[in-house]
Length: 283
Image (cartoon, rainbow, N blue to C red):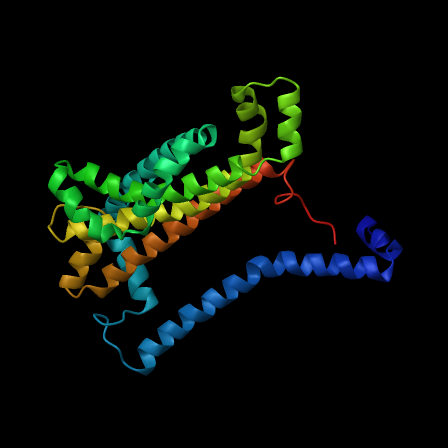
C-alpha cells in the first residue's frame, strides 16, 4: 500500500469527498474545454461534408490547418507587425494610464478636469476617430499605434485610479499621524493597494490593445497601406480565399488567448503570496 493510499484511508468521509472534488475540478478545468473544442471542430468538419460546402465558402478544419502551414511565412510575418503595434500600444497605455492615475490621486482638481476627456476617448468608436488621425498624422505606424493606444488606455487608467482611491482609511490616517509625506503614502500604501486593480486592468487592456491594432489595420488596410493580419484577412476576402482568411482569424484568436494567459500568469505570480484573490481558498 502506497503512502497516498494510507493517507486516504486516514481521512474522514467529508475530507475524502473534498479531496476527490478538488481532483475532479483540476482535471475538468482542462479536460472539459478541450473536449468541447474537439467536438466543435468535429462538427465543423462534419457540416462541411454533410452539406458538401465548397472550401471558398467554408473550408474544412484540415484545409485551414494545411493553409496555415503553407502560408506560414506570409501570415507569421504579418502577425509580427500586428504584435509590434499591440505591445507598443500596451506599453504606452501602461505608462500613460498609471502616470495619469497617480496624478489624479494627488490632485482632485486635475482628476475632475481631465477624467471626462478620458471617458470621451473611451466611448467614441475608434473607426470614427481614425479619419481625423489619418488627416493629422503622416506616419502609418504612428496612426496604428495611436488607435490601439486609445482603446487600451482607459482600462489601465480607470482601474488604477480606483485602486489608488480604495486605500483603507484607517491605514491612511495612520500614515498621516506618523508624518508620512505624500510620496511615502503613494509608494508604501497606495501603489501596493492598487496593484490588484492595475493587474486586472492590464489583463483587459492586453486584449483590447490587440483588438485596437486589428481594427486600426482594417481601416488602414482598406487603403492598401498595412501589412498586418487584418490586411491579410481583407485580401483573402477579396480573393475568396476562405482557408487563408480562417487561418488568419485563428492566429489572431490564439494570440489573444496567449496574451491573456501570460498576463494572468504575471498577475498570479505577483499576487499569490499576499492578496486574497490569488490565495488558495479553503473550503
